[in-house]
Length: 90
Image 1 (cartoon, rainbow, N blue to C red):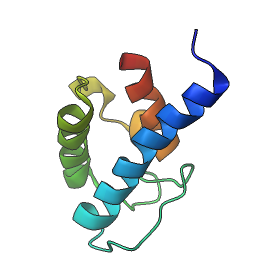
Image 2 (cartoon, rainbow, N blue to C red):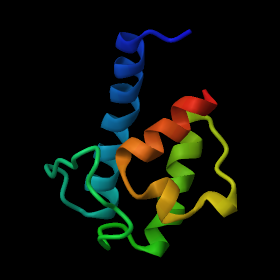
Image 3 (cartoon, rainbow, N blue to C red):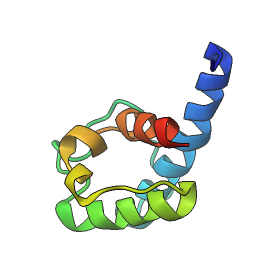
């Protein structure tokens, strides 16, 4: 069983690199901070072209497999929802 503190640390270890990647590589705003619950897809912050890049980053960075059917706003619409998916697969 994962303790609450461990879960918080795990989420931070996932959310921080995701946020940095999106800010640096997708938005080209390296100093931008993204809130864990900020809408990424539904707000248009991340478009469908960059969604694939983000999925590749997730697979390479975290060693998890993202199925093509998971490339949706439900899965990728916030850092928190994406981090939860990654944490569940580690």
